Figure (tube, rainbow, N blue to C red):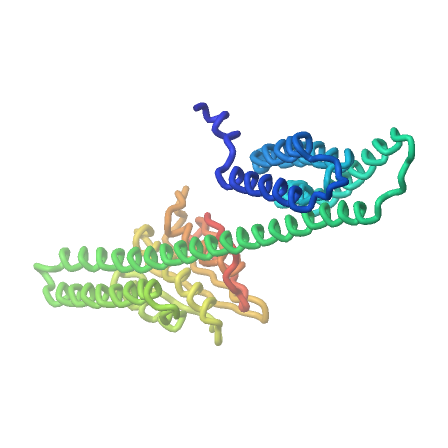
Length: 378
C-alpha cells in the first residue's frame, strides 16, 4: 500500500463509530415509526447507511464528510420518512469540523450549514402543490443539531490546544533545566581543570629546585579537586532533589582570586554588589569566574585582572578586563557561549571582545532577573 493510499485509509475508531451511529439510526427509526409514516425501507435505510459510510472518513476530509452527511440526511427528512436519530450523524460531522478548524470558522460553517439545510428544505416544499409553513419542531431540531456539533467540537478543540500548550511548556522547562545543568557542569569542570593544569605545570617546573613550592602546588591541586567535586555534586543533586542546591555567589570571589594568584595572575575586585537575589548572584559569580579562568588559560602575558562591580536600582553591571594585550580574533567556544547564556537567562545582556589592554567581558544583569523562556547563546 502506498503512503498516499494509507493516509486515506479510515481509522478503526471512525469505522466503529459510523457503524454504531448507522445501527442506532436504523433501530431508532424502526422503533419510532408510525403506521401513517412513509415506509422507510429500503429508501430511507439507504440514505442512513450512505451517511454512516461517509462518516468513516470524517477525520480524513471533515468538511467533505459534513457536506455528504447533509446531502444524505436532509433529504431523508424532506421526503417524509419517519423522524429518527439520523440527524445525529450531521451533528457528529459538524463536531469533527469544529475540532479541526478555529472557532470563528467553525461557527461560520455551522451558520452556512443551517442556512443550506433550511433553504433547500424550503425549495423542496415549494415544488409541492400546498406549501406548508415551516415546522417549528423541525426548525429547532436543525438548530440544536448544528449548535451541538459546533459547541462540543469547539470545546474539544480548546481542551486539545490547552493540553498541547501545557506539554510544550513542560518540554521547554525540561530543556531550560538541561541547558542550565550543562552550563553549570561546564563552568565547574572548565574552571577546576584549568586551575589544576596550571598548578600541575608549576609543580613540575619547580619540583627539583624548590620542592616546597611543588608541595604547595600539589596541595592546591588537592583543594581545587575537592572544591570541584563538592560543587559538581551539589549541581547534580538537583536531579534528585526538588529544591535547588545552594549556589555559589560573588561572596566566593576571594577563592577565585586566590587560585588565580597561584597561577601568577592577580585579581582586583572594585565596587560592591550589595545584597542580590540568588539567581543574579549566581549568574554574576559564574560570569566573573569564567572570565578569570579564560585569562589564566589563554592570556599568557596577563598579570592582572580587574573586576568592576557597579549597581543601581535596576541592574548589576560587571566588567572584567585583563592586561594581557589585544587577543586578536577570538573563536567563540563553550566558555563565551556560557557567559552569554548566564546573562540571557535572566533577561540581561553581555559582551566579550578584545580591547586595547586585554580581553574585556561586560555584562548587565537585571536585579529582578528571573528565568526567561529559552536562552540566547553567543
